[in-house]
Image (cartoon, rainbow, N blue to C red; front, side, top):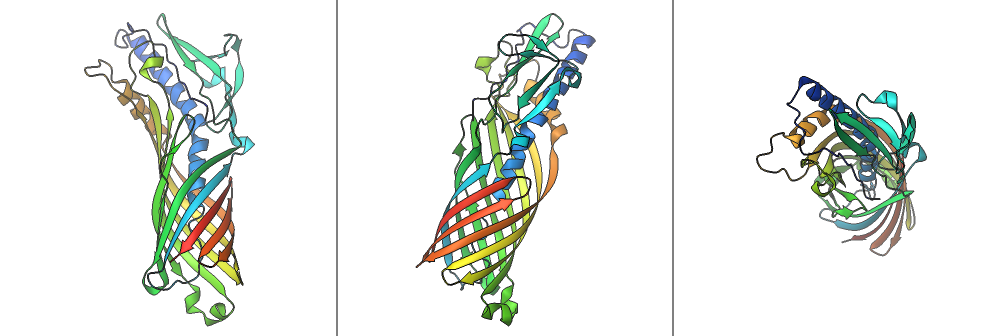
Length: 336
């Protein structure tokens, strides 16, 4: 991603306790900042859920006790045009006014990128007393696809059940990080129906949990001419419970699979950064308390199709998940 920069130019002699008017003005600044943050960060939080949802099931078929499968996955998320930008108007704000970047020409509205958008920027400007507060709108991913890699592993346990693990190292983006890890249990269903077994039709149900962690550079002390705000990064924490049903049909070395996915995600945010000791105004605490207003719980429904090809004990698998977004996954697996 392009580097995300938030600039609040708060001169060092601002004291929000000076007058009730300044306190009220700072409250309006907080409202505007969180309003913008919600519009900007929500699409990438949704994308993180889709990225973590795909590729859990290599095959719904029943495995022998203690069989192990290890996989390396490359994930490609296709960024939809509808989620790359949103419109802001001066009427949306109670504190800020919109100016073009870098010429500082006032405008009544602007189309700005979400975290999945371009690197187009505008300036938002306001005043607390005689002191200027300057907010440079953040840039987006500025790409049509987002890539990350992860590892999967599964072990067959009793009664046609598998324990599945998913883990990705921290994926470095151009302006932030992404990581996902999780675990789940898959249970084979066709073992209870002889006709399905004879026709090589496999069915399974899956319950899994994943944690998606996304973070972006926000405002560092070096970019702030006033007090240290302690909001160097914004961190998105997503807890997802997923329920999935898959059915597949084997054709010699090929296995064709389709699935239905439903998941429920709790999405929270927090600001991270160095807080100077003895700071008179707890900026980080104030922002973190305010950002709780955009915590969300979301339910998603996805379809999934997959094709798996066997080469001895090695398998090649391509998977597509689709719903609001489209996500693809290509995996190389080895069965022990």
